[in-house]
Length: 192
Image (cartoon, rainbow, N blue to C red; front, top):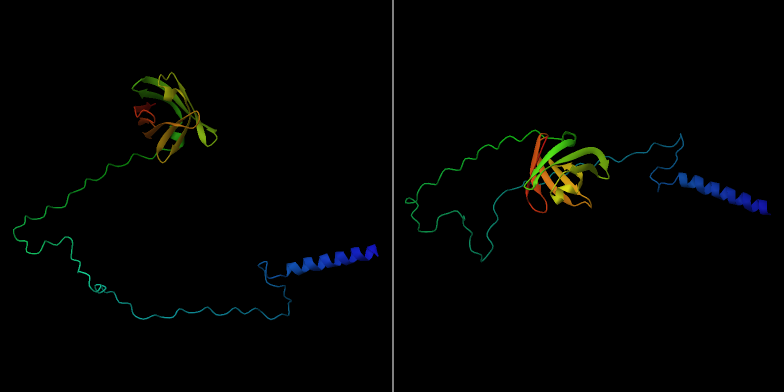
């Protein structure tokens, strides 16, 4: 009796497993035999042409005053007596941008100059979580003396203190950087 229950259960499980493989709910079509008729896909529907499109201004709203040109002279103004319009201003071509730097070009030893003196800052290529390691030595400025990480994003070098606060933001090239200290706004320059 017990063997027949186990046998019945095994047969039912096998039938269910095979039935699931042929289900169309799982994205595949049913299993088809070699003699089955081929599946016929319906022909794509062609776009129906629409009528002609006209471009014209809309009629004014009933009862609303007509809006005129805001640059038009006032009614009754003597247009002939007005001075001629000044020529359009010429825009000087922008200075060419410096060659883009990269994070690897910023790695190394830097000499930092602030209003409080000078010190050494080293930018390392070894990662520290999502930033890179940095160290400062001989800095009398409290913000710079706490620098322990840095990052290079969008052409700017960010110096970070312990705890993740931004100490400074700098821009420049791989030879010199200039910017400001975040808390005081004092100027900061880094040079090789």
